[in-house]
Length: 353
Image (cartoon, rainbow, N blue to C red; front, side):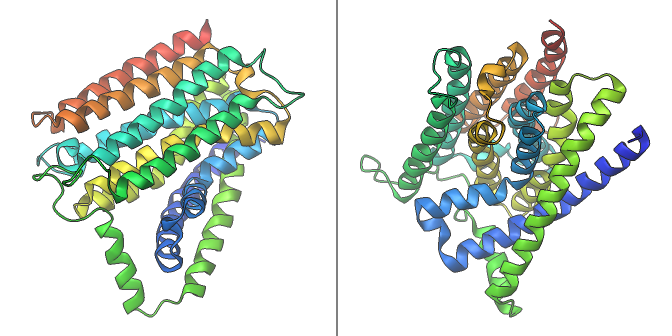
């Protein structure tokens, strides 16, 4: 396949991911509301899978083709890049109003950020323990990451309903005024008013899922060709360009949430997706039959560290709620942007080493 054709297919697939990802997110929210999926642990897990289909498709395709370097880079690089999406929302979504963390601050979001740090820490630890810890061909560390995520999702669900030692609201009094997910409630009401049936929503969900899966596979296949043509390391390509393509739906849905003043939802979508992505290492193990974390290089561990650092900065912002802005963004968003840029430069040197 020629380079122009590979680039053309990549751009078309990225556009398809963008459009289908937004449609998929909307259909998933409607089905969740009508079927009550978000009320049970199993439902929350299914919702996480549905909203991360682009990354699932790319990881599955890469694992089947044994292109695990690209898969690992896309997962860990995607976490860092999706965190930077919050910087974009802070600058262009609030338009000189209070910083995003000031408006979104809540204890539940802090716990979601802690879950991201926890699963990424397990990735780093698992990389060091990958060689000695193997049962047959199956390494249990990836399974432990999945169990930690499930446990974290369960505990966060309990925290949303209330904590025994906290009598008042988990959100500050001058933060988001309307309840979390009120922006999605408007979508649910509009669909009901227009007479859109659950069967029709399910059909849209299936169609968007198929398009997302096919486009994700196309992205993975063309990414390998483009990286080889331009002489770019597969890890760097997966962590930057490919991760940017799969983050487009988060940009659109995040902007919509911020526009409707649902700041908590915008933050939660990013943190929730980032916490789920390391679970895909387990899927990569099952599909490829390889110990994925053992194949991770220094640059992969470096990416995990950058993801942890970016998340910790925003956790700090959610706790201390700094109100000062620089260049139309909160000082925590500025710190995240600077760390990401420096981290991207550092990645090039680490990948060459």
